[in-house]
Amino acid sequence: MSEYPRILPANDSSILIEFGDSIDYSINAQVYALQTEIENSNFVDAVIETIPSYRSLLVEYDVGTLNYGDIRDQVSVLVKRTTVMEAAISDQASELHQIPVAYGGELGPDLETVAEHAGLDVEEVIAIHSGTDYHVFMLGFAPGFPYLGGMDERIACPRLSTPRTRVPAGSVGIAESQTGVYPNESPGGWQLIGRTPIALFDVDADPPAAMLPGTQVNFVPISQQEYEDRARSE
Image (spheres, rainbow, N blue to C red):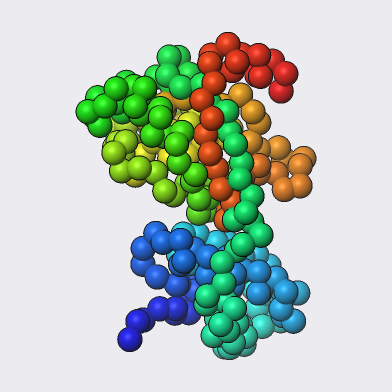
């Protein structure tokens, strides 16, 4: 019998609900289904914040309203529901973001490194990377940074041995078997293969992040000239 799902105390005001121990679409769907159930529950006013990840959900609660036993029992009921255990987040999953990307050159300084590591031509790496619809598993590392699943293992590449102190906003990177986009300028150690001219995070927008967990992402190759034209209009 599986040990999952399981509910654990995280600290004196948070609990952690784990659905598995691997990066998996069905596990991730359960995480977000439970988050939705909690947001619609009769105890949501006592919930301060929910923080989803690949395989778990952290729930911070008001200890003045609920104790650990209370929140554990309430969440246990939701976890046991068939709709939580089997639901896919279909409404979000139907949304596909098409992100224009100029690959290589000064916008993607590590593209040739990735190609060499994979034993492929640069054009093959671009075709493989842009030929997949990616699943947004979670946001993390930095505000709005999407961790994307579904990348072809043929173009997997290790992180940089020494991270860059500055990665431009919009940079598209590869780290091991994952790909992602830096929505803001920040330090980072992913292999940079291209850059998008569109803004992916706006603190004044609702929601601030352009790509939300459960949605899909496809990268569309554009030329450097198209990148510059789009960047000027953003």
